[in-house]
Image (cartoon, rainbow, N blue to C red; front, side, top):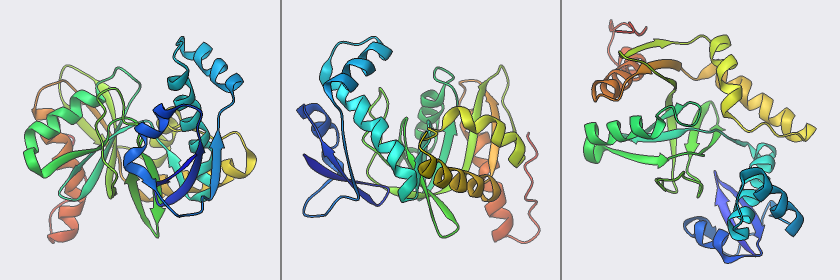
Length: 249
């Protein structure tokens, strides 16, 4: 049994195997009462391994624990999004797409382009939460196969859906367009009370956060295009007369 802090929320993990504790080591806190506690039975682990086609029970427990935490988090103001998050100059840029589309590749382009100004906040499964009217991306121990991430929270500058394409193009999405895409990339809790909390946060996110569609290749120019476009609105706010709407060029 140990406690961790995720997105500002302290939760308890009643683990059977040491693997999940090692994975969560950078998030462990001592002497704080958990808001909730999760555990996985041997039956839960067996079912999970049957789903993913695995046999390692410590890994199966880790998957069960992660899913149980994410189903609880909406009750405490946060929810999971399947995405890669890169931080540049203290702000988070969220990239989401089905597995295999190229999120990790695009994030690597950002790291190459911006050097020490950039780092990965989470490579696969960040939590998102509002503080006031600002959406924050939050690191978690579940960081994807590259194991890239850190235990930090950063304000979100924009959310970008990725599609593979021969040429680089980007455009701003309406809330309705973003809504049709985002449901594939978030964990929707089945419990009614958690679902109501999740829906309220998602509705606020769609109303207040800037969403984009980036059709891109694996060339370095893709990272520059997405960064400049997502920064353009902020620059327009900072510099009078600079147009806020992205051109898509």
